[in-house]
Image (cartoon, rainbow, N blue to C red; front, side, top):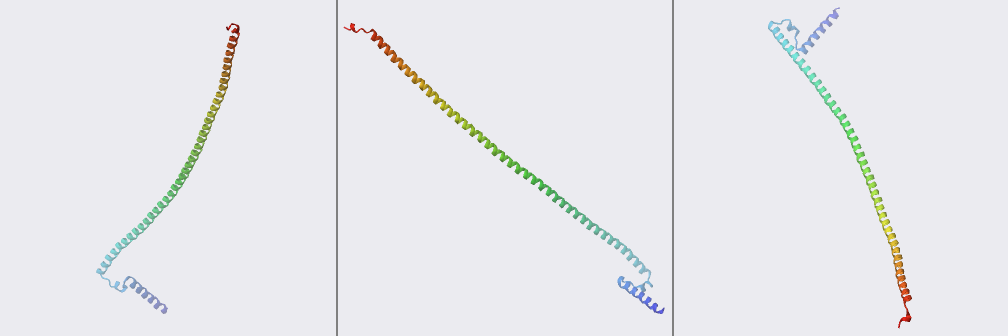
Length: 184
């Protein structure tokens, strides 16, 4: 058992040395502590309490600031992501509007071209009908001119024949009334 005593004693001495080096603590001096040293130690303990509270508040504030920074960062990133979603939706709406506009413009141009073609066809058909009516009028005029020319020629011939007939009759009357035996 004596072998165990030195191990316990040595271990205890090693522990005192470890604590002394870590905390600047001398266990032997505690045995002879004076009132002034106790008061000083109490003041330092109170100060260390205050320092602990300071460190605690500082650590708590730092953690809170980091967490708030993380929350603010998350809000900013969320806002940016929302903005990107809205931007995507806006671009989709703009794309739909652009497609609708292109369709409207194309439909309007096609309608305009069809209308223009239809109007031109109508004008062309009308012009041809007017031209045909004019030609019909000219033909009719020619026919009427020819008809009345024939009528006029026939009337002239008839008139000439009547005149010749009148002359002949007058001549015959004169001849009938003439008495050559009385021409003396």
